[in-house]
Amino acid sequence: MNIRDYLFIRKAKSSNKIKILDVLGFETDTTIIQTPEIIKAMDSEGFTADVEINDEISIPTYESEFIKDLNNDFEETDVYSNTDTQTFTPLNVTSQLRKIWTDLEQRRRWVMPTLLSIVVIIFISFSSVFLLNMRSNNIEDEELTNTIKESTNIYINQLPDLLAIATDPFYSRYDISNASANLQIIQSNLLTYQDNLNNRDIDQIDEVNLKLANLFQIIEKLDQIFTYRIMYSEILIYNDVLNIDENTDIDKLAEDLSIIGSKSVLNGESLPEIDEFDSHTQIVNSALSTAQDLHGRLVASLRNNEIDVAQGLISAIKLNKESEVNFFNKTIDEFNQTYLVVLNEIGELP
Image (cartoon, rainbow, N blue to C red; front, side, top):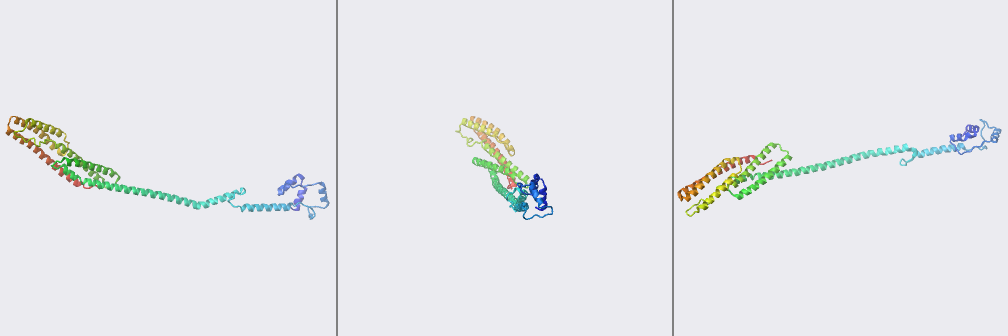
């Protein structure tokens, strides 16, 4: 505190001195005593604005305290400025926030690339697993397709054998039954092949569909022929019935011929309709009518003891059957040749 400040304080009113000291930064509890005696004594000693203060005058050490307070303020400011950013200081919030933002910026430099790398790795992993699964499924589908194709072609190669059995003049019920069962297996394989065809990319799909249509048609025809052969095998089958001599029981012969005629008519009506066998079916119906007429005349000739007439009727009955059989053999031979060519043209399926 200089002399001017001191004189200003001394001349101020007693009630304002504390406020002035407070403004200048001194302790507010400082008590300033001003009495008329003190002022008079100071005036008698010659204090003026130009008088220097002696060392003997007891002046409160406000100046030193003021300087000390300022130094303390500077020291506190230095402490605040040197405070670690990780310690929260209420008086330096801006600096603390700046430190936090700096830390975030520093972390962002490695956090973002790390997160991006993790996302890329996860994406690549899922993509790899997805592609591997697709590849595995494609391999399985391809293996299944090859298995179906090979199995179907193996069964298709059996169709000529089944055709030969169906058109063989020698009838075997056992062979026909086995051939019919194998035919059902072939049909099932063709249906499986057709269903699997939707999952395949084949250039000549129309040609394949045409081959399948022809194969299904042949299978249907063969199935009908197997049924036709079974029904036909019971039409006008005489065996030893026509072996007649003088000891033949005419009543028993009449009964046997009646059973043969009735059974033949029933089976003739059950013959399946096949385009290639329409002519033969008509021949069968004609042969049945002729046979029934000949049966009656044969029994009548035997009852009249007309042996020569009876022998002629027996020959006519056999000729009627042979004519029908010959036409049947011709029909099945034509069928065999026609569809054997179709099978050779079809070949194997892709």
